[in-house]
Each structure stands twice: as structure tokens, then as C-alpha cells.
Image (cartoon, rainbow, N blue to C red; front, side, top):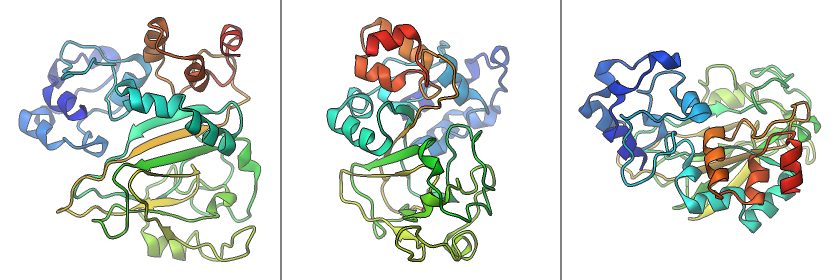
Length: 314
């Protein structure tokens, strides 16, 4: 679906200037170049800076956009797949077991932060060791490279949890692209290198930030754990915990993955209809068409919902 949009759209016809965006270089949007971008979000770097955010905030509905057999929702399917797939919409926003799981992890009233595809194509360079901040990082107090010297539970009030789903599984010996984490590192409340270049592999990370740190409850030294997950498995971990994705081999198939991230509410936010993880243009269309159940609306609503929403979703 995403590939059909990439290859079939006339990217030169989009009115970038009136949206405050820079048009892509003509050489990056030729038919041959567009074909080379197929396979996932890592390949869509031909899009100019700001275009993804514009699609999310406002929707892009120029005539040049091709949608294949799907109804175009103003955003790339890779970046908001639940707008294009009813199964993902159900799992991410209202499935009873998923909602129970997330309530156990985050407490009542959690919100969606983002949902996107994380497909690792052959030759994917993965991601070096890093973490992510809560929201836009406005509440972070530790230095992203050297901070986090003492364990703390302060992150519990403002936290985001990532859940990764691997339909075909994920293991160390199936062609690379494996996920590595550090159990217990989330207690140090450091979204590692979140606003800096991510350059460290295992050796550099172990000799630097990880050196000397111990698990706050067991007292054992923190260690890198490489995960092996059976098909259909999901793994959840706190957003700011350091994690790493290895290189994917060239002669292996794409590894399919879905990322669903949720967070606690920011009590400092004023009343709003939708939270920042919700494309408002899409949510308004869905609401008008009767496509959002009360449970779904609660996941998408603002950190502090409006009085009308509160009365409706209860």
C-alpha cells in the first residue's frame, strides 16, 4: 500500500511552496528513483523536511497523490497504518485485551502517542543505541549522553511505553536487524542520545553510559539483552530505555514490524479535542462518519479533554 503511493504519486505536482516546504530535487523523484524507495519508511527520505509533519497535522490531498486501491487519508500508510487497516485500528485503539494490557502498564486514561510500521528491509542499517523522550523532551532533566547516574521512579508520572509486534518473529540468527534492550536501564530515566547523533554500537555503549550501572532492585550489573521472539510476539518497554536495532543482511527478506506507542497524560496541557499523536483531520472525518467508538475517542482525545468530550466518553 505504501509503495503504491510512493511509486504512483506525481511528487512534482504537489504545491510545496504554499505550504512552506521545499520541493524535492527532481533527480530524487524520477520513476527509477521512486521504485528504489519501496519497502518501508526508512526508504522515504526523498520527501522534503516537514512534509511528514504537514501530512500528519493537515493532510495532503493534492491531485498528484496516487492511492492504489485504498482511500487516501492524507498521510503515508507507513506513518499511520491504522487509518488504512481496520485490524490495526482495532488492535491499537479498542481491542479489550490490548486496552487491559496498556491499562496495567500505564494506568487509566493513557493516550496514543504514535503508531507506525517498522519494517527492516534487506540492507537496513538499523538504529544505534538510543532512547526517546516523553513527548517533545520538554520535561527531561538528565543530560542525554552522560546523565542518569541515579535510579529514580520519577518517570512514572510522565512516561511513554513502546510495544513492538513482529508477525513473523524476530531473532538474532535470522538475518540481522535484531532488537537489543537493557532491562532495568529505564530506572535511570535517560532518553539516551535522544537529541544527539546516534553513533554507538555495543562496545561504545557498554564502555560509556552503561559502565558501572546496576539494576536498582537486584543490584546486578546492567547488561545488554538481545531478544528472540516467536512469530506473533509483542514486546513492550519504556520509551526512554536505551535500545538498539542491528544491521539487516542483504540476502534476507524484509522483517515486518508494527510499533504502537502510548503515554500517560500531560496534566499541564490545557483542554484540547485531540492529543498531538492524533491526526486531527483524520479523526474529525472518522468522527463525522461514525467510525470512532467511545473507547477509540478516549485514546485519541486531548491530554485534558474538552467538557463535551468528557461528557460523551465518560
